Length: 324
Image (cartoon, rainbow, N blue to C red):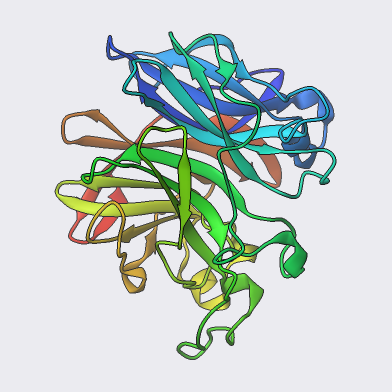
């Protein structure tokens, strides 16, 4: 378990170094804030290393907010780390600014030679929501402009792909089965945003990879192939999904089978992991064929925990995933 006595820890993302050690980057904020809801505006990106995903060595923080004025002078939020072709590491992260009230999310990048010391690459973000396809704050339909939690990987086409938490500008195109909100209801508009790049520097935002399917937000998206089956993993708090999904849920962590790491995904086959407090968890292949979920513990007994739980084994059961 990764628990800091003086800081809450929540969203995290892993990467392995050349020696096989697990590096975990995570959001952290001081417990001196007292109210855990205040942590989002005080978030920095922490860093720890482990050989087994259980015992952790705390390393220097990777990134903190920029000095004002800057696009990321409000907070630095969730992202992912990849190895670039030039051998450097790239940390793609979410940034928000004070000038916009922490409400407009964009994605930027930092780089490192050793995974420990990081420097921002460029003066601005590399992607943001494109109004042709994605809901903007000016629409007034939601409490923020969602474009966060970038998950970056190289696809079979040789391009780098970025999946992000986003919302459709079009809303739900049609009312669905009984109990599903009508077209355009704000709690149904979550989609998986998409951008591509040939070099990790210049990005093209493209249409979403999914249609609205019953969630207000699909946070911390990730894709992985488990025993030959591609899955989309994301999370959504119960109040931010439509009644049909709330009835279906047994926790905040969702999985959806698909045809590839870029979809399409069968949202009729979506399911949740049976855990009361696990959130923003990542699927990690700890050893060949051995999959675990690593995420933080949220609210238990009315109190926010803010700690990374020990890895939980996961197995595939047909087109579903379950905790072992």
